[in-house]
Length: 117
Image (cartoon, rainbow, N blue to C red):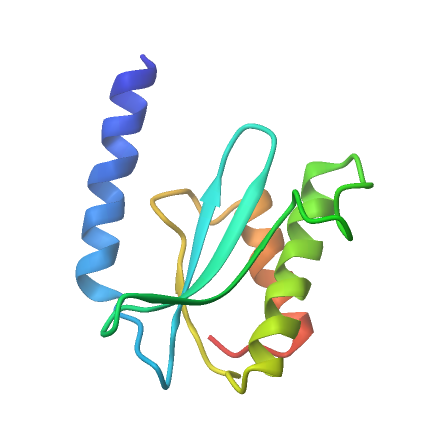
């Protein structure tokens, strides 16, 4: 079952990546979700560089227990780091995950932090 689930997510992810392309002006906000943690990166696809990153493993966030609270904090943290580097508009890449739960909380946290997508 898990291999079918993974293959399904990868197929959806490829379809999303055909449409969503990040640039230096408007980087791609990529989300990766594991069972315990959540990670976010700002990526410039033209150059192939990661511009900023945040995760629930960072020291500022690691104290909280609720996964949704951690995801929202990661969204706010990536927004702060993006604004510090001069990015206010991004393209959201949900990575094949449903826009629900932790992925949605991360997106809402990033919007509250000042990012526009």
